[in-house]
Image (tube, rainbow, N blue to C red; front, side):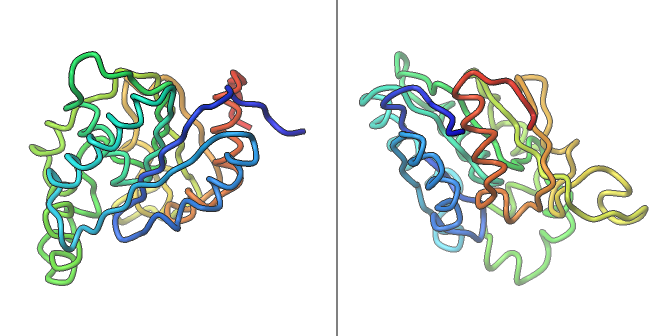
Amino acid sequence: MPIETPAALHALFVHGMGRSPLSGWPMLWHLRRAGMQTGTFGYATSFESFPAIAGRLAARISHLAGQGDYVLIGHSLGGVLIRAALGTLPAGTRQPHRVFLLGSPIGASRLAKLLHDQPLYRLLTRDCGQLLASEQRMQHVPAISAPTTGIFGVRGIAATRGPFAGEANDGVVAVAEISAAWIVDEVRLPVVHTLLPASPLVARAILARLAGINSNS
């Protein structure tokens, strides 16, 4: 049975590092089918610094906020960008109805720490990649005051050694890396990190929360 969402609610998707807006199209299709308006925000870490991208995103969110109620969906680095952008919105700006963070690190990423000195990683990810590896910089990315749902993939690497050492993970981040006290609820799904924005399970979890159904199914 289709899940009904609030009328005229607009969803903005921000993709992860190394991905593109296309990565979220399968999820956004499900949201549009439920009656929502959707949009995407794109960036390229090879050419823009984190502050520059976050500044563009803040301007996009400010424009969206002037049009009515909206939700934000951020995958991985996209969620970090959303946090940074929301923290710079002018006073009085309409806050998001809800924020969904898909496998988005709260502090420095363990994998980013391991890779931050590698030439190829530095070339492709530049300032954003270094931010993800820096505890100090990540601590300055603010928490979100709007209701926030964390959607965590748990179909990752099952090993007693390595960066996750037996912890629940999605292959890129451990659940412990994407949890925070200000995240009001969590959804754990059998999905790998890269496929979170394409998963119908993620789309259904988003729609259920927007319809007021607090279920992890």
